[in-house]
Image 1 (cartoon, rainbow, N blue to C red):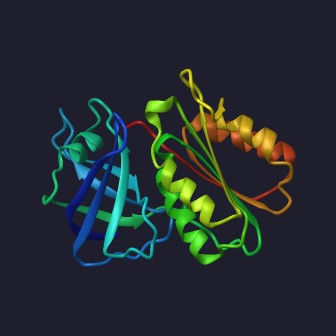
Image 2 (cartoon, rainbow, N blue to C red; image 1 turned 45 degrees about the vertical axis):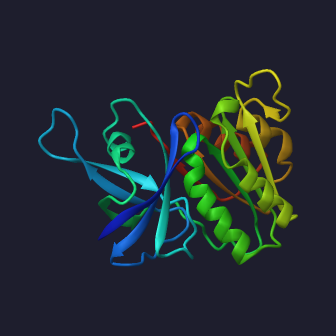
Length: 236
């Protein structure tokens, strides 16, 4: 893996505990990666003399080679998110990458299903943006599970993408919605069970907690055989 130096070019708080951090590449000035891959930071950890390595998926599409976007939760006491949340615009940081076997394949004519929970949306966003540019007429479905209304973000962006690409379907479901929510409720596994009628021409990409991945894989396999690519996300 290569080592990169970058400058924090933009910070945006998306929710009460989710932050988007954009990095502008300095040395080298560009990065080449596959949609879905991650970069890694070496960060200090209290009580340890050596830094620890923490990976973060790239949320921006590969065509944007001069900048990369990260999306992360603030985890109390987590060395990775604590380090990244302390960064300020204009500061420099370094990371290694890209790496990871969870990336968008060229699956020919297959329909694509993306399933994410929480900030597992990060690599999925990169994949969807790349796919919609590469093959805009191929059916793409996103099921994204969050907890409640205060955890919502990127809804306008996803809605605009769906409006511009009639074959892109996006459903955000809340597992613990508060009164007034008009959208889907429950877990993403239920969406897969109810709305995916056939897997004969499907490739699935899953990113989130291990429980979701296990349940969705079992649900899909009960319907038949299809390629399933997955990456577990940890709350550091």
